[in-house]
Length: 134
Image (cartoon, rainbow, N blue to C red; front, side, top):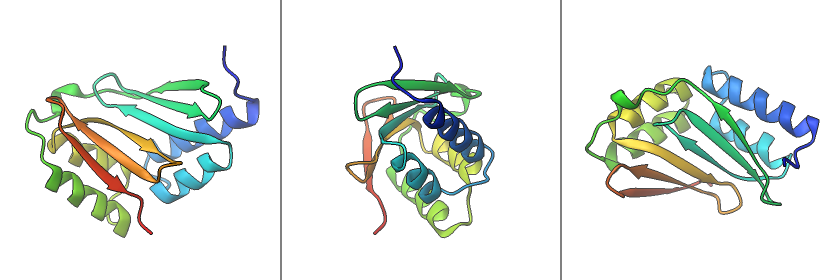
């Protein structure tokens, strides 16, 4: 049973769509999700799913087109860091960020909003942790 209200669902759908089409930056995503009590979200590139979690434990899953065949088997934290920096500078939006992180061997990531960090995962258990910019 979902404990999301209609406003939360609407904001999540809006953020999801705008992010996946490259219309808003990560910082905007985070601010909008904070405003509706989202504490974290998990992006699974292999399944094409993003799951949003409220602080009460409720979750909402949305789907996007998966491309697991694009994901490199070799995890490269330096390439992930480069993709993050390009996103932070505004030269890369989310659709290109996904492609860059596929090439870096990322199978998905978890954004810990309350913890102000993102953990990126590789298929062999590799993890790169990135703190939110200050």
